[in-house]
Image (cartoon, rainbow, N blue to C red; front, side, top):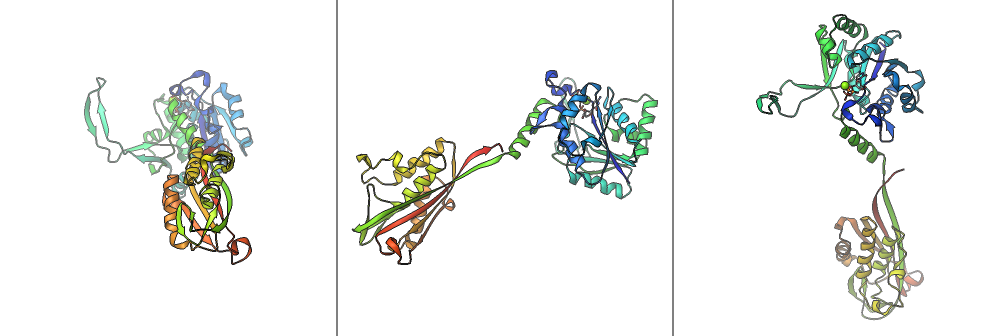
Length: 398
Ligand code: CTP
Ligand code: MG
């Protein structure tokens, strides 16, 4: 068995409008011509035999442009179509008959989202001995029959109704004979190949189609396909920033970390409330949008910040991030302190972060460690904090 492919691309795409933009199969979606997407699927499918592309005589340059850089495209056979889809398919079948193909898949160039899983289902039906295979989707909408006056005459029961897709697939001699018979009897009103096969008495077997395998027909279909492919190809613009802060401990009555006051026999000395945790996180957030550091926004020389609650700094940094279009997705702080014990206050600290940043609690993390009595932190001369902020700034085109 050799499964040949016929891709019909000789239409003018009149319903997709804009003659100056050219036929729809050569317009770009996700950076490539519509036909490029379908061809890629067939060229990379392991069971594909010879491929015939049926084009309009005016479109040779458009096709060579559309397949530039596509591996395997050199071996495709090109032939000219006719003024109806039926005639174009017939031309494709005649060209394919010059090859060793025994079977054929006939596909619309205007269906760029065909996928290998669907092709495999059809090939399985060939393997099972079917002579004519129609991929289709069960109709899900309620169907109405209405008159030209816009008045509904009846509701059509949808049980047993299917919407036909491509590639419709056949034994090559059988479908070629059916097309020949139709042509000789001047029957040129068939809208797809399965209906010619039915008319010629072939048994047409349904296989499940693919929901995404839509035909691009109107302008809006092209715009939506482009949007779908473009967003799929974009990278999320995830940025991380880090921050570090340390303050000296001096005799006192308690320390404030992550906005939580803890009674202690020392206090942190500093210009504001010396909350190293919130200072480190403020720097981490500013780092995700190149907005400098905490000192740039709240200079220690400015008396208005003396003794200020550090939550003001953090809230301000979060606002700057939002103004840059960022969405804060995670805030993580590691505290390095010999004393006081942080663990009993961790949940209160996380709640403060969640409230100040306006993000859910599971995106806020506070951890603490001692410094194993080593160094200035181990000697209780100071407390340090390290913070990491994760912020998503939309999407990036790679
Ligand atoms: N087709 C073809 N030859 C024709 C008409 C159609 O090869 N004479 C192809 C189209 O290029 C398309 C597929 O058949 O890939 C399905 O047809 P359709 O969606 O109707 O495309 P067009 O005929 O180009 O569009 P329109 O009917 O809006 O003009
Ligand atoms: Mg058409």
